[in-house]
Image 1 (spheres, rainbow, N blue to C red):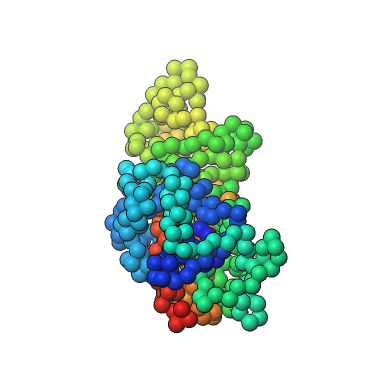
Image 2: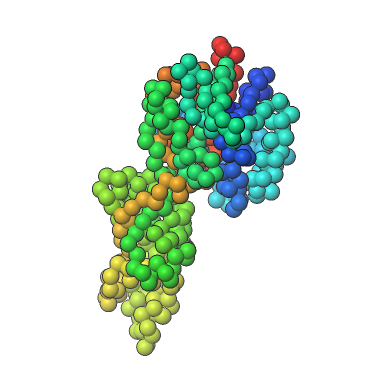
Length: 394
């Protein structure tokens, strides 16, 4: 296994359970750094929604991922956590968390089990590609190292948060071997907007709560966060694929924000028609419309506020925000693109490199946050591990 994140470790466990000697190589000084980072705010391991709805979260890749997800579904992942002494629970949003709410206890128990299964780990080994005769090349603190395993499972991740281990450096090595790769792009990412200096300095880091975002005919209720560069946050991430593609195509995208989704527009207009009684515009909007200071300032970012109550209510309910850029892939939560589905067979073995399997985020799929990312990493790793254990070379 090349890559010591969740996919690489799960592939190693699957091989070891089948009686195959497994060794994990990783370029970092320790394993699963991104998993630990993801668990800092509570490790969202999977999701508890209906299976068909769950699969649909993977969009165009759903038909390719579904066999893996059926073989290792969310309930099986929850059982696996419990076997490691970390039972899970379903939160009010349907997201599934370990009861400890953390990644570190789960990872420690997992690494103990892997060691007991005889899985070896070699750190500070960066994969550099293949030699002319098919050996695996690694750069290490002691120089280049060549390995010649019977089978190889690649679990090299995407290119988000490269300081945690995955930097997309594998792309050219695989392309050189004839493996088809879809360009890596940021997923579950933030976007850029041309804020005024006042708004940027005053409100960067401030959440926009209980809003509704609309783009491309889809509306999402939730929260977003103002950043110095633009917007990010859970509701933004759900729309990020469509926003990213629109900006890539047109150079910009207009996001519509409903700042008061729980209030009908007509009722809001009636509230705004009340006498101001000497109140400032900000005080009036706060009291009559229930807007927060950041929401009021965001209204002003698009221009002077309308005087007419009906027009002002319309602006509050349909505030257009021009997004003119996508935040860099290194700052994204996850990565779209990767090894194309037509470049692997039904066992996830690379067609151009027999005996080499691919799994995890390096495959060409994307999904929203909410447990879908980890679930697909685990499920594809189990599929690749089972297939590798049955390869004729073993």
